[in-house]
Image 1 (cartoon, helix red, strand yellow):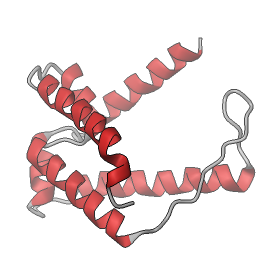
Image 2 (spheres, rainbow, N blue to C red):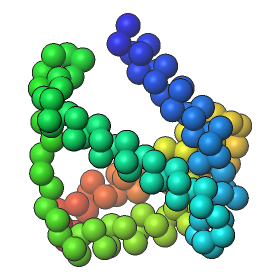
Image 3 (spheres, rainbow, N blue to C red):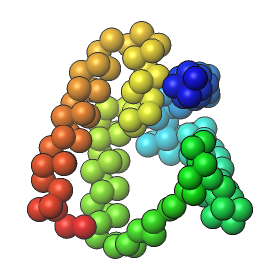
Length: 137
């Protein structure tokens, strides 16, 4: 039953991404050229909602579906780590035209070449796992 709930949430998330054009290469292109507010509005809305939900979890001690307390560990605010990670993520986003979430949306929408991007992303994640201890954190 719980897996069905996760599938439904994922489908709704995918439909929202597709209908809001967040997975559109043209919208992303506009964003990187500072020609339209569309993507900045979507990202800003996600930031506001995400901040609100994290605040709510901490403030009201909301528990998971299993009844366990949700623990959000504080992260180091290293400038170098955020700078290099943001540059690598932004370059990948600009090169491919999509961040990880919309990859699945694009595959679901029938853009078959995106499978190659997804395979590359999984390989990059695997490579990061191997090199993680040697990178600056």
